[in-house]
Image 1 (cartoon, rainbow, N blue to C red):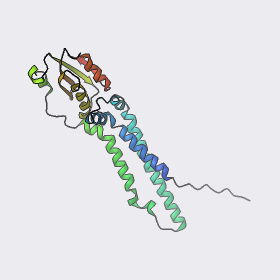
Image 2 (image 1 turned 180 degrees about the vertical axis):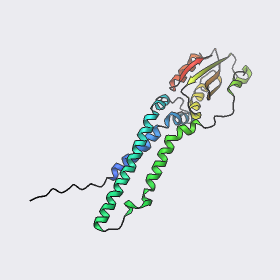
Image 3 (image 1 turned 90 degrees about the horizontal axis):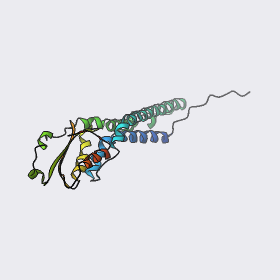
Image 4 (image 1 turned 135 degrees about the vertical axis):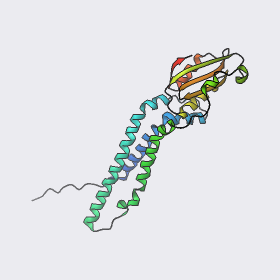
Length: 220
């Protein structure tokens, strides 16, 4: 007479661990793109990072996904160690690398990197923006800016949440033919652009802001 044998729990595969590690890092990195993206694009001279607004709206989702993968990686590691310990106790074998504390170093590093990436937008939000005063820019003259038909476009913006967010937007303003100087701040969220009114239409600046995924609240 046959007796039903309880199914033995199988050892979690290393492939599952790789997917958890990779997914966690990818999700944590995606959560940083709302602030890192504009900075990278500006540094490479690529202009607007149009997806900045999208990644800002999706940041809570990416952060939740990163936490899910990190938690899954720890559960995967715990299950792997538990099964390894059980097998060793049944066979009388000594504990291998699968249950040594030092083998958890990779998991700890992975968790630290994922947390650092996920928190970077909050860290950058507190990064010093600079000592320049927005109010001083409004008093610039034609000689200061090198613009013959000086006009000023001043706007209150929405969607700028860290110092790195302003870099690409300011560079995009300055790259417009006819612009003398441009200054963008996120505390408060404002832009001041000195430009030649005969060479560029002021509506172009609103288009630039919206191309980045930000919004113009008011124009003065």
